[in-house]
Image 1 (cartoon, one colour):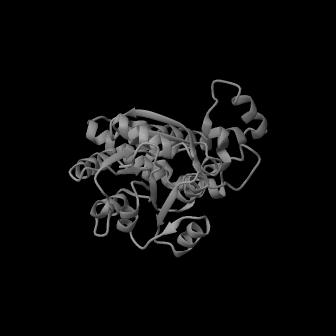
Image 2: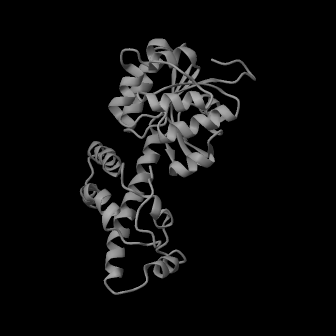
Image 3: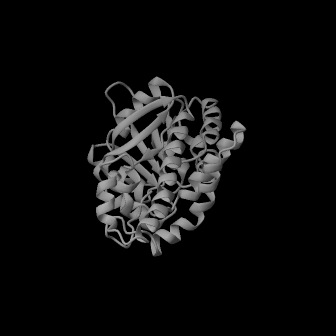
Length: 285
């Protein structure tokens, strides 16, 4: 734990496209940052940006009072925290692990239980708005955790997130991210179908888009259409489906979208409606 007025020693495990942007903001704000990634190229880029690099998650934990996890999947998050050479092997009591990966609410709640037995807190902190917001420091963090843990997290996350929403307990950050992504992919699939249908009439899609964005059909997915690639859509919908199963509820629309996103990445790259006049999508997380 840090003393009043003392900066956290920040670690990042997973310095890919998003994690690296976060790392640069932290270094620029004067934080002492230690990074680890499986990619030698990512490690070199981190050193060049002013961070220290080490050879395991445990070494990140040993050097840090506040660690951000930015790997892709639930099993990877669990390995980083609980595995051999993982964070819990090395972090001191009073430290914080911030899970900024998009994972199941159950995953972060189980990690919280394990971490508390070591005197370590979990900050449930998935991020929204994609890579361009990461570059500009305007991400949205949806956080869950104890008030004092969130307060410490705000100091760190405000370096790269212009908005931080505290949604409740550990797990509620991931609930917020899952609901956000469900709405994103529902709208994304709808925009493919609406675009194809509109194109069949010969209408100018760009003009239609501009009109719809002034009406009740307005969506953020339309605004960000060029950035959307559906890369993580199936993973996101699998998380939502697991939540629905746990709740014992049937959601036909959610189930249909989960199936439809399986082809959406290919469609977006090859045959998507050109809502903005561009043919090729930019990457969106």
